[in-house]
Image (cartoon, rainbow, N blue to C red; front, side, top):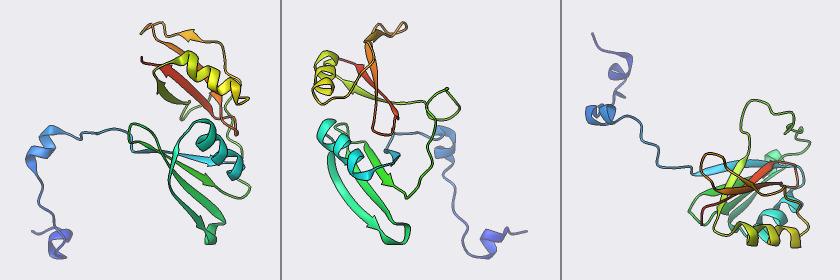
Length: 151
């Protein structure tokens, strides 16, 4: 007896070796962020954090902007604007994405850069498991962001 996909001519051959290998994630391609004020967030991510604009589109039907930003490691941040998007609480901690962490070579220099641009950071702490230094700060919509020193 043939399955519906086979009868419709849409059956696919299954690579048994691929099934044995399992799903192999290669990394994170992008993280999507919804901004409350598109212009303010664009300035923050581009001018303060130094991310490069890859592409920018205005979606008329949704009255929304989409900005693709390049991270130095090849990953991307997609910055969206939506009219009257509701706030997402950062505190108290809740289920879901907790924060976004960026690798930095020199945490002191990164903190000095943020401070020079008026961005407050928390005190630098030591990761009790790795011994690495890190700190937190927030984007214009109070999304928790982390700087994690790898250098």
